Length: 345
Ligand SMILES: CC(C)(COP(=O)(O)OP(=O)(O)OC[C@H]1O[C@@H](n2cnc3c(N)ncnc32)[C@H](O)[C@@H]1OP(=O)(O)O)[C@@H](O)C(=O)NCCC(=O)NCCS
Image (cartoon, rainbow, N blue to C red; front, side):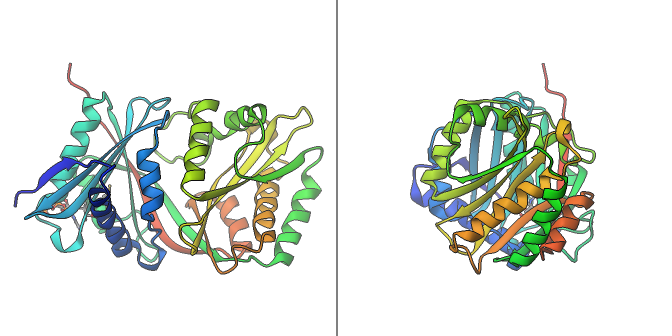
């Protein structure tokens, strides 16, 4: 079967919508009720606004004029310069006819043209599936093309609000170990560049200091301007970010956490990164910031009934233990895979 593959024009609503329909349909098929679809407005803003940190190419594949496959290549521009995040989706009724292979080849060719030699891929499946993804379409397909399974992740959810008494108990446990650190919480952009710079120095290490299994990642760049541009995109996407930092006595950020609340849909809130920097471990700061941030979000009263979604590496027992006390339950799994190639010439 021949498939026409092209880079979509993200400023063309119809092309972008057709691409997104494939992505969301596949996600629903793979993760069922645990799927976390993008809304069109969020995607359109994200795809159309300039980014200093990422170059993204989106591909559609059509058979007989109907879009049945979607590909994406995301290339970091400030760090991890040898890498590309590659994603391939094929509608369930069109699988096992070579379309995924054709789309993957097109994605990898783009990554190679940009000098990328490390390809990162992620696939998701239901929680009751095997931890190593054996037998799932994504992992079997990726392994067939040389991707190696590096880390298993689990998606957990709890319906808001989390019991305030449990949060108060966890906050008291954290406070008992917190010493001289001061917690500061806000929503929206960073209040000043100095605080932002200090936050980025911690947050840039999340990618390497959270469990990484057999994966190779490099720290992210610390770039205030890129983050400010990203904040503008987040605001235009109608997403509200809640941040809590723990400040050391010298005013530097020792730990942070982010929650993201979209307004284009009213079903989910997302836990983004949480990290305590190495120099400040042992004070339960990760717990302190997480609880304070969630208390602030819940205090708005705007998110009751939404599902709070978090992802953890399966081996991250400490974080998972805390999440389970808050009522999180596992709903899906994912695998992070990597492939390394030699570039010609
Ligand atoms: C993974 C996916 C893109 C494959 O699309 P596809 O069009 O079926 O892929 P192909 O027909 O080119 O398959 C190529 C080979 O991959 C392997 N493969 C694909 N699906 C498989 C499955 N469900 N079980 C076992 N092997 C599988 C087989 O070796 C297959 O060759 P074969 O059909 O001759 O046995 C599709 O199943 C999908 O969209 N899955 C969900 C999203 C995802 O996980 N994407 C991959 C990670 S980026």
